[in-house]
Length: 393
Image (tube, rainbow, N blue to C red; front, side, top):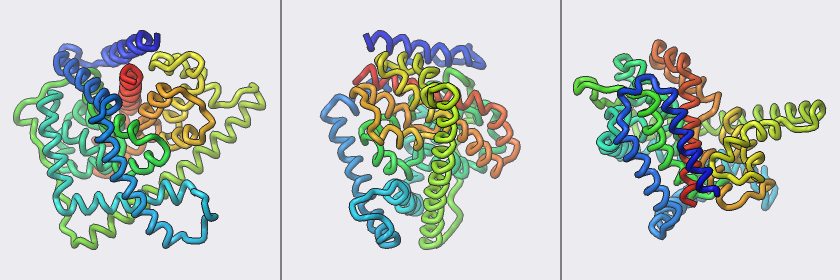
């Protein structure tokens, strides 16, 4: 039964994207179909094969080692603050972002990361039919983050059309930053995090190709990546360490504010209606959760987490799921986990448009103008990845 419902949900997601399309005559249907097939193949490899298990285990081991190294630095600074045997969220989940950000900085400094992003972007452009810059942007967003990625293409921004800016923003909002993947793995099973990274990358290309199709001339399809300003190694390292700390503090501040607000709103709604705000959101999102392949008796609870992620951010929803209060089946856990791994939420509109305005005010205004379209497209990517996960599981 869930396969049938999942297929209906799969078709509905594509139809919604098609209904949003600005120039349907430009949709490259063969490319879209090929990428959809590729999504299923990659998802199947990661979730259902021994090869996928080896890949996931290896990547999880890398991040586990990084988290252990990070713990050494955290323990040195915060030793004695936490009770013995306790695991404070800020120290164990957020503070490792500082160390992983430093690793990313080193890989960029020695030119490994830029070569990887550019090479993979060029290769993907042959598959997805999008521009080289758009393909690079999708890969770079998954590594650098939704705001930082635009710094690497700031020289190109003045020359980009409204459509290209929209596509890049959809890709940026559909992915997550590699610097916080380790934090996600502390809350969710690593195989779901890695599966989401792969599915969302292609999902961003697929939804963009349907919602916002266009054709580029050879003179427009150029790939120029802004190099980092010349710095000494330790100048760079200090910058990335502070950037990582800034991200960790920002996430912590947002979590404090959002979780407190939800607690207050839940209290008010419970007093007035007898139901919490999250329960009401769960009932609203239950049909969408059901169409994702989630069973009817779990749809309300799953819908509540999906809505929480959209209204607040992915960390709030992940921490709710990680508390163990939801007793989901394996399939539902997989679908919800994959759905949560993206930046598709309302606050991301402000983050992307703000970052863009800092580089080019005109392009930042375009992002704000299409903010809801970008958010809906990125949310469709999350649903598409979740549905495919449910069909494969």
